[in-house]
Length: 196
Length: 356
Image (cartoon, rainbow over all chains, first blue to last red; front, side, top):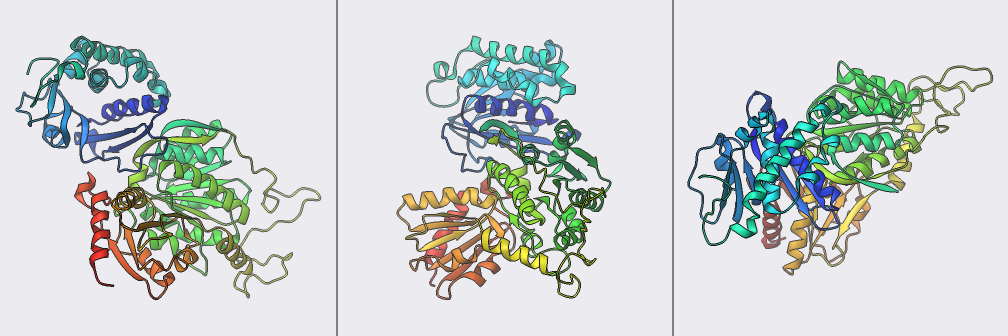
């Protein structure tokens, strides 16, 4: 998952890691960030394993099954690292429609607009991650929301209800589209969940 | 008993330290070690300890040494340049017999601080145990061990980590019980009371209760501690070395990747093994010197310009060819600061093809 600003990307991906740990899976998360508060890229990667032993791989995988691009500046780099048959969710509020690479599924989601309509544009990353997790059938909204108290510092706990609302909205929107396995058939790029 | 949590690596170190009995923490913020300080600033006071934000690394290590002299299990963390600033006091603490734990989150290049850590970056004739975790779980386990070692021997212990592992979050199993080191500090300076022994913690002042002169005999107490640590505290991980022809030697983050590389090459039928020093000092010299006769090549893989390879060359039998694969990592690793699995496999294949 890649974007700018930073904290939203970190929180969204760590919520998935938290949900995976609660589900008894091994999880390895890596965050690459630096001057993101001034608008540079924040990129987080997540490996989830069903194995009982810790993941013996690099957390920054060169080829991923799923990816989320939140900002146009880094969309190309993220989509270039997807496995054949992989899924790219992109933030269509900021990223213009593009011609996807063969074999990559693209899912345009107006995450900024959706979060803004709920009163908190900074929740766009949460909307996007909930959308993708639901679409992929990996974790439902409640599993993601469960991590908020642990991952947010106490002085941010007043944001939990709004964050939970955004996560549920993202999951609900994805549920209306249907799971990836049901819609993404056939060769080449397949767009689901919105207008390309 | 343990509990499984999904923790940021720095937070995992801090929580493990608290559960290992840490009662004092001071540091000056520096990436990638700042998350340890962030967590300690909130959690340590809640656990009955004291946290002090320092104005410099020198101030931090001096406060930690002072707390240790007063009998408080104490820790600090910094990164590379900050650890350089702390070296004078670490050397003093080794001489004075102070149990304190120092965490180095090595910056870029990720294993450039091997010599600084292992050879004793400060003054005088001393070494301190250096523990080199390779996973977040080992950050937890070896933090606990660092406190155990430092208190068992009354000696500083260094945990050598890096920016790669400290930027991870991972599932870890933490001990649920809190350790207490109350009663283990009878040597500490805790104030004079009627009938209490007169304690002295110093590496330069002569202890009137000691049979030897500290100044004139070159600190025999410190020497005795180091010899005991060397004899008893070597840790090494060995994978598939019993029939190997080539053995990969690596530590820390590199080992996480190298395990996968070795496993894949074994599956391809190549007789490859892995030897990982978990303690960089004391160095597992015997484990290297007594490798099976089938081993013809040792490939030392590092993320620096080749530092540990010097210790491997000193330990290896004469008939074994020692090769170095060292540098800053490769782009295939995803972000260019570590070696990828493919890069290590290529280095192993190249070593097999080269004439001995």
